[in-house]
Length: 294
Image 1 (cartoon, one colour):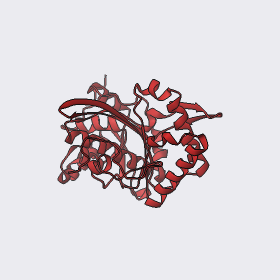
Image 2 (image 1 turned 30 degrees about the vertical axis):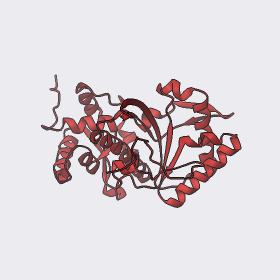
Image 3 (image 1 turned 60 degrees about the vertical axis):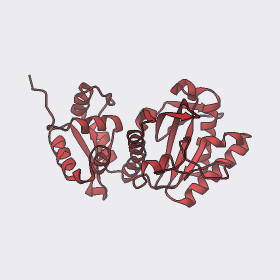
Image 4 (image 1 turned 180 degrees about the vertical axis):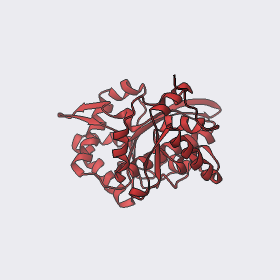
């Protein structure tokens, strides 16, 4: 019988992070788990994990991007033994194909940057707990609505926060649930984007959101590559909501053009940098009693 392979000492937390986020670059792992000066150490650990068959690299110099890492089948088995819940399926051919697709790699890195910020925000603020991260793969073929034709809404990722604050010396606790839509490179086709907005509204009003995610809290955070694109996507959203006779639902939709790779977690989630559909002032994505950002 073959002995069970073992990763290099200290690599367990990298495997656990890959199980949670699914794809990560060395730079993202460093930002998530280590001091900035530890990048070379992280790269060394990843080389050892690749050599040991625990981790599979995608992209790299062939597509002029940072290497993106994901767990192999062996890595998923080991991570599951650590108490994590990585996705079970790993097909090398599928991952190799993704590694030749710069759009997929760029888009995935941008979405993961948002999720890392969510995790770091919760780590830094005792009153904010990140209770769920849901990756794009987990959301595939999960949300179907009829508008009247049947379509599938597939957010890029989702996260749920539990927030506790003392309001007037009384502790108050509530949830915030965010679907993430990242348009960091290519603009969407207008009709397809408007169809997705219509789908989101139908999905929420039908009770499907509450049934699927066990919460009525909902925000759709649209992160565009430029101010111009954010303005256009907001305009298309407003046009769709007006055509549906549902302008009041504009409060679900938030738009900004921050770069999630460079923005601080507090800036991305707590600063008034977001515009809501039909809103007249910028607002934070997560509303706390105080909106001051350190």
